[in-house]
Length: 113
Length: 114
Image (tube, rainbow over all chains, first blue to last red; front, side):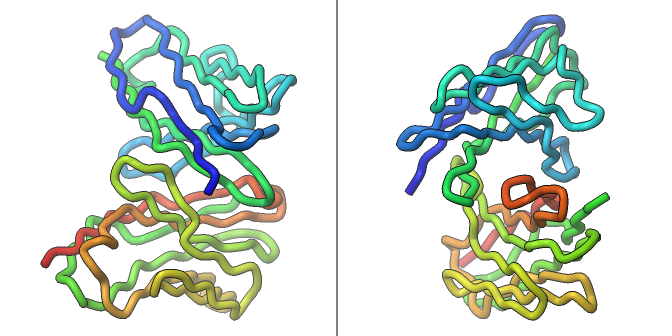
C-alpha cells in the first residue's frame, strides 16, 4: 500500500529556534498533503492544506508566518515551525491524499524547551 | 462546527474480551464516518468507514454502525487480541470537508494483555 514517511519522529529544540519536519510520499505522487497537530488529551486538529506548486491554505487560528509550509514537489511537503516556543510543543502528523484515500505519516513529537 | 467525541483511554482488556469504544459526533448534514488505527511507530491507517445512515463498516473483526438517530459510530470487536493494541481515532468528513478533510476525536489507546 501507499506509504508516507515523516521525519524526524522526535525533536527537542530550544525556544526561539526553527524546526523543519518533512513528509514524503514514497511510492506515489501527492498533489495535496495535510498537516495536523495534536496537543495532549485533545483532538487531532487540521492545521493546513498543502498543495503542490501553490500556497498552503491555513485553518482559522493557525499562524501562517509561524508555520511555514512548502510543497515544492509532488512527493515532499515540509512544515517549518519558526521561532518555536514551549506552547508549540505538540504532536504533528502529515497525510497525503490519493485516490480518495488518506495516507498518514507516523508523526513528529516536538518538544520546545 | 463539526466535532467528534470519543471515550478517553487507556482502555485495558484481557485477550478475547469484548471491545467497545464509544464515538459520537456533531455535524451538519450527513457526514461520512471513519475509524482509524495507529499502531506503535506507524502512521494512522483507515480501519473502516460508513458513508450513510445504518451502514455498517467492518474490517479485521472490527465493526461500527452509523447511527444517525443517536449520532454515534461506536467501534466493537467480539474478541480482541494482543496485536490489536493501538490508538483508535474516530473521525468524520463533513459537508465542507469533502472526502479529504477530516475532523478527528482525541483517540483512544487500547492495551490488550494476555
